[in-house]
Length: 334
Image: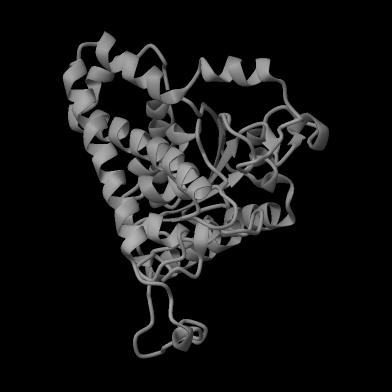
């Protein structure tokens, strides 16, 4: 997308929703980190602070009945697709009203009703799942799209290459969306990958590879919108590489010895949320009070989400096997 293009060509309601969802993701992550330190949330948290534009731009470009697969850094994807903070917070806290009844935790949240086929603790694990969903859509004759979020590290997994090849052969309606934040855990991309742009790999499979500024929510939106249109028209997959950066460690508590403070500070200057906020104000599409009102509503929403999680019931031992076996009479269909 042309970075100089005015935002006025987009509906104000869409732009405000971009701002709202990015801000909700950012504040949710920070609040979850805080509640982990306070003891409400057990286990690891892999935050996506700094990567909000990839999640929001991509999901807002999809239709409500399209589906996504996510990663171990998936809170942002789920909020961007329409997930509710209260049920996500409850899931992270291991409580019964959570999206997966408190069983999935941070790494495995899913909601088929929202088209969220699951976050995945296995690196690259969601890629073939998205390809499978896309195959189902094609076989049913549905104009639906599956989008797989994954990182630069997952682009070196066999699952990516196998899914990319098969999806190209069958022209499946799938979007491979790589959030390239430059590090696979603590390994810099240049140490594991010989090429500079992962999108270049698409040519080997015979479909387009697109590079986009992953910290520009509108640029991401446009790239995914165009890829989704191709997919719906039977033209097959697209690989989108969104160049972005996580501003916190791989996980909370990560000593981050693999990168310099100077590098982090440089990327902070490209933070997608203040960047988008500044454009909205500069182009006089909204006023400061409107954005402050949205921010206030989000903080109140997160206060309620934390209270909801604290008051929610714990999973019961007698329900431990619930969901282990499929219920063919009440099964979920995406």
